[in-house]
Amino acid sequence: MSARALTDGSSALILLPALPFVSPPAGAYWWLAASTVAYLIYLYALIRAFEQADLSAAYPVLRGTAPLLTAVVTIGLLGEPVRAAQVAGIALIGAAMLLLVVGRHLGRGALGWSLLTGCTIALYTVIDAHGVRAAPATASYIVWLFVAMGVGVTAMFAIVSRGRIIASVGTQWRAGVVAGALSIVTYGAALTAFALGPTAPLAALRETGMVTALLIGVFALGERVTVQRAGAVAAILGGAALILAG
View 1 (tube, one colour):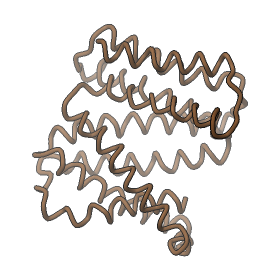
View 2: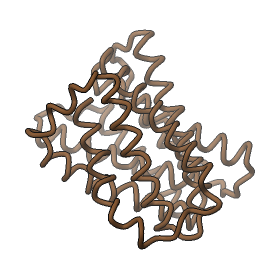
View 3: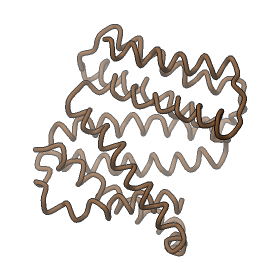
View 4: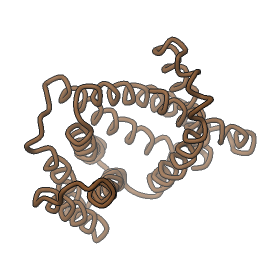
């Protein structure tokens, strides 16, 4: 909890000096507000999911459902254009992520929180894709969003922890600053991509980061390379290739 608050709080502090140099996000204020609320629900659900299940069991579920739900909303309900190859790639990535949870114990409560997390990821992804397009400039939406999220997350966790997260600032602030800067780079890049292209394929491509997580698990943590893991990596990469080719 404290690490998450420090990460988002650091992102806000890093970008706060940039506010006077970007235009106000006219036309995107409601998107900003909605995204911040969705993000706060996402973080709460994420923490609850990890409290009740191992990371290796909950993470593939919540990340695997997000691109599939995003595709359903943006393509099926909002009518965004998409090619057949991209739909196949989205489905392949989602299936690969869910393959990683086969055989792992996931209780009813943990499954519920994981699915809620996946739903909120899809929700704030769709909201941000529309918000960054509605803003007068991409940089404007990015800066205002990170500042709003940082303030919201820090306030929420300060209330939930009854101020205990403040005590962790002195010992964890360096890691928080690094994580906050990386968060700006990674999600800032995603928002820039959303401003230029269709939402569903780009949201699915974000999940290719799971390949890096699997490789870290194998080479840094000494986890076994199973047929299931190898198949999931191949499917994720294959899905990414289909999206890019489409």
